[in-house]
Length: 270
Ligand SMILES: Nc1ncnc2c1ncn2[C@@H]1O[C@H](COP(=O)(O)OP(=O)(O)OP(=O)(O)O)[C@@H](O)[C@H]1O
Ligand SMILES: [Mg+2]
View 1 (cartoon, protein in one colour):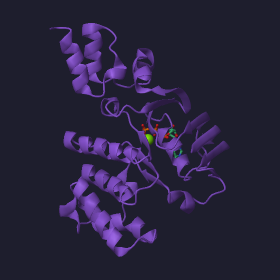
View 2 (cartoon, rainbow, N blue to C red; view 1 turned 135 degrees about the vertical axis):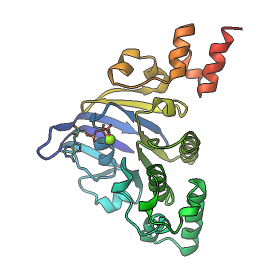
View 3 (cartoon, rainbow, N blue to C red; view 1 turned 30 degrees about the vertical axis):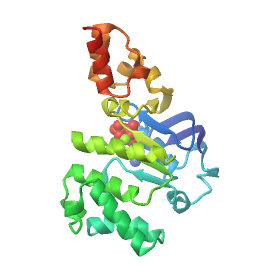
């Protein structure tokens, strides 16, 4: 459904930001994109909604070449939450921010009210309904930018660094949201450095380095590649480091969360 073929991208007057990317993502997949600062993660996901077009090669989304389809056409099905909420939020009030896309897509008034209420409840933003988005804390702004995309349920949801500034409770909500989305058969692409967060979601992991794709595989396969993880400045979940120290290589595939890993560590000490 999302297909990158031999994609290079150079920013005007900049260095190459993507090199020879070949990638295909199927409907309903949960994919995480990792890599150090400047690796090209945000640049890559901006190609999925057609905001950036490849310098060479092609990107197709739902069979449409992004160079030929309009951004408006693609935007109807691909929702992107930008890394910096300040680049996204613009409305007078929190409610209007969420309503903007719903209105644009011509949904009914009742549907809009329901969706706004649901996402405000889900992200614990009800009390700011009539406030200016600019008055929210940075973590709340990030949540609002996710809520305003979630409200219209795009087929593809792209989250660029969604955990930044979120406390443990909100990170759990975010995990719940990703779970709900994938249960509905929708596609989710998450850009993150946060392996601790991603681990519990068991996504397909893609690692970018200096604009190139250097790894693509199941979570447990990638986590086992110590050199790769270290080389790309990623922190492995601490509990997994502990597990390796105490018991050697753990059965990553059987860990869905930190609690499973803790049980496995403790079992050896019984
Ligand atoms: N608007 C721009 N103009 C010129 N160069 C840019 C622009 N945006 C990004 N770059 C360059 O492209 C490369 C990839 O940037 P990108 O933002 O995609 O990285 P990233 O992996 O998302 O990094 P981070 O983890 O810091 O968010 C970097 O070298 C960056 O300096
Ligand atoms: Mg980025």
